[in-house]
Image (cartoon, rainbow, N blue to C red):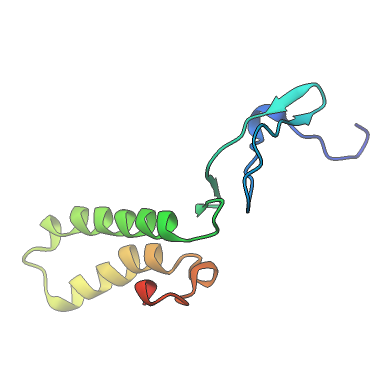
Length: 109
């Protein structure tokens, strides 16, 4: 393509939002685009029901993992150092893309 955008079917994925229609096969040229039940884009987990349970679980898991890595090294550190480490490493994980999952459900507050 001259100056246009080209798509690579191997890097594409089809996710259907809303009511499921069986056996939809999306094509890009002669290649069939694989269908997925969820999609991770810019580290935001999307699912067909447009609920954020999967994404929230993934984010909280990452934050707990980071916290678990920090705890042993900061066991005897001053409170100020612990606070700084939390704000620098763990908090950005929890705050990334919070706009897309604003707490309109009671379970997210």
